[in-house]
Image (cartoon, rainbow, N blue to C red; front, side, top):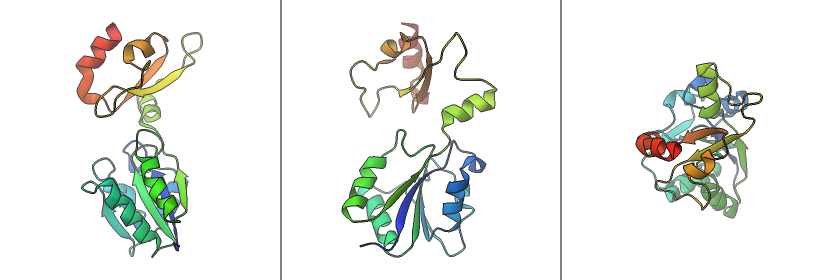
Length: 181
């Protein structure tokens, strides 16, 4: 049995000041924080207490990450897994939660500000417009993760709604071709 709880906290779209108040408060009382250094700024942990154990997961395997979280939950009341954006969108949330559940470690999830919302705010735009579109689709293009049938960009574009593309910056030519088709 564990002594503590692991919180998956969405760090937001990159600006450490866009983390939620609940996320910041959990960081402030954390005994250990594991952040995704390839995606999350170390500055997001600036509210951590001086005694907090802080580690970067960018070179860890999924098994190493879950092992670290289980180990730290046995030693600390509050452990934070600080993730990019929102933990429930395009992350390995369920792959981390299952081993924690199996180990009897309680889990909590704190949503984060999505980059889609932050980008619209930064541009002074809206993702929906009356009489133009009231639907927003969050998607990505096929890469390391294949797309299910019926979810190609060509098929999604037929809906004539707002498409928010994630994890696709290196595929702009393919995106342009697919959307123009």
